[in-house]
Length: 384
Image 1: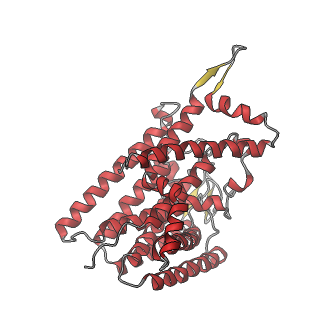
Image 2: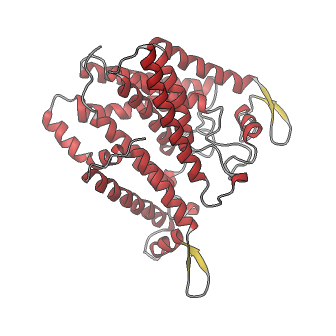
């Protein structure tokens, strides 16, 4: 077993960039005037915003691999490692579930799925495959997961919310995953859709494949292969995934984030690999010490974010919910939310409503960056 490599600053910075993008997308001043480039695709297709979550799951996979790369893997140790992963997954799941209580605090309508819940489930599933199977078997697991998911979604007939049966209908609320979510979690799904959930149970399977792609990438990074050759291999791998994802889009299933289709999984993996490779080369793999130092300085804000990513994401989610929940009394006796109270002054600026909404998201990001900086300055690194 080769020696573990130093901590990858590129992975911290890439994670931080992803979290910063999440804050920007999730916290507009006015959802009715969401800055267009920050919107998700309406259904099939993709935008840059649709890259954010799969990027983070890819990063989870790389981190899982690197965290276990130099640890003993006897049967007893494997069980211990997995037990720790299960505890971590349970904590992340419970944090996400707790955030869904706000603002209604209603157990009967509590949304069970969510972003943190999906992260937790993929850690549980991908972690088991990482710990108990070889890298070749991990590749087989990826193929098996995507094949089974694709076949079930296209071939198994299910009723939609109105009771109309259909097979392979990949429309909102009419696919196998939506049927499964209604069967298992009726009344506990995303309130905007009610009949399906973008972080539903069945689509967590291909999301797990996204994590496993990150696991394989982490294995390559931690190998004794020279960094330049690693960079070349990553570029080739990412490019092949992008091309394959486009082919799958035309021949099998459309690229769709809400369904986390196999084509979406593979395509987003390709872009995640290429984006990470840029960070990896500039911050860790380059032979130019001057370039690496400059890039590390330039990316320090992202690194600050990346060192406390999950904590900051949970905190940002809590703050956003509280700003919508807390009501502020007005001079005329009416009440408006704290979020609207903070946003209203921006609407008086000589800019468009869309730019005002974007400015609010930027200011929210700066608030979170300030918190990240203070934590970094005090060496407070909160790990789950």
